[in-house]
Length: 278
Image 1 (spheres, rainbow, N blue to C red):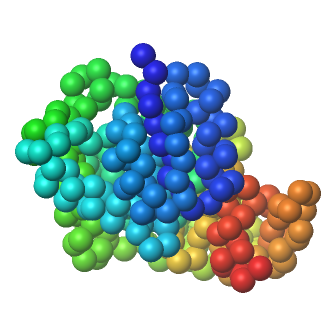
Image 2: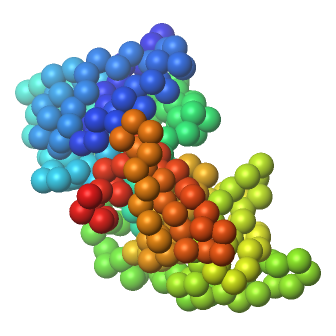
Image 3: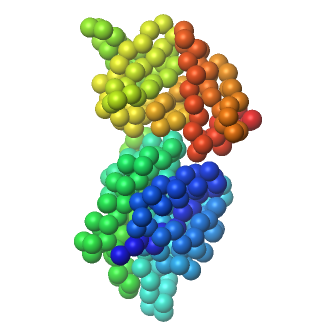
């Protein structure tokens, strides 16, 4: 049985990228797409999809405000017009606090730029919840989906310092046989290749013990570090030059010794333009 889905994202390139990945899976029917939170609420009430891929950062009504509005309407309509809340997979580029909140409440998420394997994993989790009877039930105010989303919203309302903690000012980087403490501000970028994460500063290059870039991002200051591409995390203060590239894309020339050039993924082009007013 195919899963009916909506894609809600204010970036057209991100919608197209996710649609392409879902079409390659084969058993997901994307019934509609929306570009903002208002459209999200209307499309969900119109189509009653099994699954919604929902962007977190949208102007006006963001992803969390969409959930709050849906839950309010869901409770108000249960007696007159019962309907079931869909499963949600959130999409986010850099909100690491939200990522932790999703983990706590068993609500799935995708980090931008999207990864084919990660999309498949999210769909497997959705199928598991649907097959396990956790899809919610009309008329039940305390359905598993609503309980999870309600707990998520409550956690996000807490002052961030109480749930998030602070990132360490320095990180351990292995350079040959030495373990060096490096100030985050000195890191130019990090890159992953065949499961090994390289950390590059202006003076040396080493390796992180983190297994994934997502794990490394948990330790980095989100005000400084940006995942410009699925294989790279850059310190925005160490970008030397933004280089126009093929088909309206860009590369970043960093200020390390090699002046490394790092691609910007299609999904992150809007974020780049916002950062530097391009």
